[in-house]
Image (cartoon, rainbow, N blue to C red; front, side, top):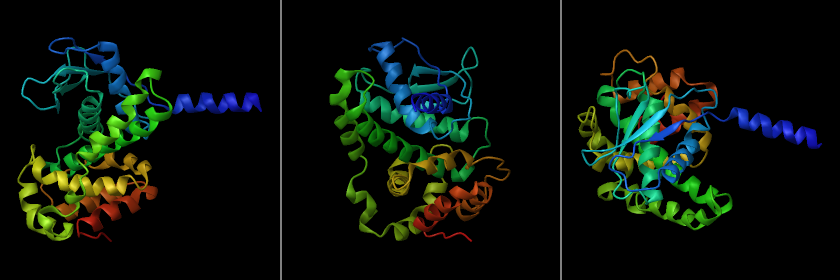
Length: 266
C-alpha cells in the first residue's frame, strides 16, 4: 500500500507543468523570492489544467504605463514577458490578481493569431481566471500555504476577489445580462486590442459563475484562437468555431458560455 501511494504522489508531481518565473529587481520594493512564490502559486491554479504544456521562462518587469500587460515580444533570452503594475510589491492578493490575468493571456494569446474584434472574449476569460486564482488560493492557503505564517493571507485573497464579484455586476445598468449584452456587444467588439474593462468586467463576472461550477473547464480557454484565420468573424461565429475544435468533454462549457451571452450554439 505504501509503495502504491508513493507511485500516486510521483505521478501527480510529474503531471504538474513546470514554471520558471523570474523577477527583475528594477522598480519593485519587495522580497524577490516571496514575489516569485506568489506568482507561481497564482499561475499554478490555472496551469495545472495544462499538465502537458511546456512554458517558456516568464520574466516579470515593472509596468511603466500604469497597467499590467503580457508583452508580445520575448525577453532578452527568449522569455515570456509580463509587466505588473504593483505599488509596493507586498500586496500578495494584488499580485495574484494581476499575474493570473496576464498568465492566462500567455495560454490564450502566445504564438496564436489575434482575435481582432473578438479580443474582449479573451480579456473576459483572463479576468475570470484571475477571480478563480484568488478564490482558489483563498481555499488552498487556509490549509496549505507556501509558508505557515502566510495562512492569514488566505482570507485576503478571497475578499480581494469579492471586490470584483459584486452581486450588482450580475445585472449591469439594472438590466438582465442578455439584454445588456445585446446593447453593448458592438462596443465590446470595437475595443480590438484594448477593449474597455468597464464593459468586459460584467462579462467576466458571468464567465466566472460558470467556471466555478467546474474549474476543469479552464482547460478549454487556450483553444480560443487556435488556428483562427479570420478574426473579423462575428461573436457567434467565433464561439461556434471554438466549440467545434474543443475536446468533447469541454463542449458543454462552450454551450454554457454562449447561452449566457444569449447566443446559443448548435
